[in-house]
Length: 575
Image (cartoon, rainbow, N blue to C red; front, side, top):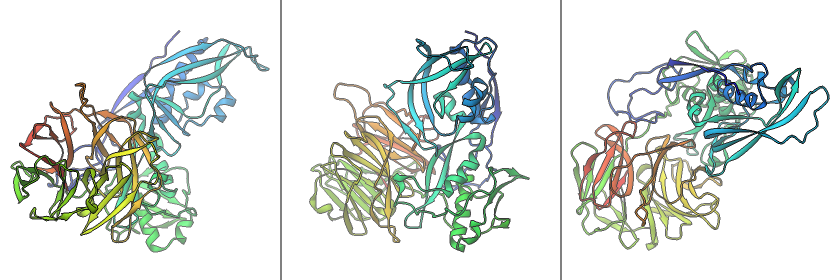
């Protein structure tokens, strides 16, 4: 079987997120000080690889035609709009096939096999048969670019019907969507944060999508105008923009300006709604940055400055990392740990959450005790309920998971409340949770049930930013079992690790843009028992506590060298 050659061209690109005060939507740690630099919203990656696939060769066998189609699909998503991929299809199949409706992401090498032919050739065809392709699917994208993981152990078989006409084989029947390897995924799909407004109106929430590089701006604006995903319902404001749509089927960059042309429905919006829409478009197309030239019109009227009075930004708050060390609360905000309060009597603490306003400690008996800013006890929290784990939330919140794995608790400003997880089935139990940096998303480690692994859901807040509940749906972000700890490293990336196996098996750890594909996260030597993220020495860092009482931290790509931040630690927590 003759194989087609693909020309590969490397192209330098411009990074979007600047080294500014707190990280914008970036998978890397950024300093919290220094000069602000804004770059044009052109590319996200430092390098992209473009493919130039060839069309079908004469007299190619059926397996070769299907393989050629697979070779051409990445370029269709990335750049050529499936121009070459359609050459492997019959004219009728090409008219009916929609490559943008979905995507299967697979690992390894596809297996192309001809199935025994029991079909009768249709009129006008010399012959017909089926080629079956088996792939190890690891993820799926829906038509809106939302990523869902699938069980890697379950292979997927995709069937393609081919007919022979005028001596040449072509695909005559296939499912909509594309099939993309993990190696090609980042090259052809672009991570885009569609910024939503939190239910409190006080934060912007990144709603992560994976959109095709060739027309990501157009798709992103359509998603801004569309409804919110089910897992964020209630946690973000429904925009109600059904009367507004793109006036043209593109969002081009013209004369260094990104131009968004909308219909006259834009004119009917209130000033506040129109300004928020322009602001969301500005930050979404700028990956959280606003310092570029954006032109937004509605039926020819220029609304580019409609958001000039809106102050909501995608900046992340500075978050501290603290340890409970020998009866003292220690801040790791600099290279030299600083004792900030005394908190004696908490030997063998199971968990810890602290901020400049105080916090809480999960005692060895499973009860959570409130701590004032100077480390004094301010009573027992959550009605003396037994707790599995605690974590910090927004503005000094303390979140806790009940011993039954079904109930969550939140404490803030002297008030506590119990929260049910509305979508959790009877077989599922929550083991730990972590709150995103802006406070509107909750990641949950779950044992058993439909969402076993890691899920994410929205946090519903009132006008005062107080928690009132959770969204009524969730999104599965990982199928990894036995997850014991997790932490939002920044606004996009979640890091999580399994517990240490009693049989001596090594812990596994992963990081991923959520929802998105996971990559392995390297841990330091030893057994990690807790994890936190925050600012240390002006950088966002991931910190872990091992079973010897040593805290280590790492930043940058999260694959760098781990450095010791504190020793003889009882518990680790973040603001």
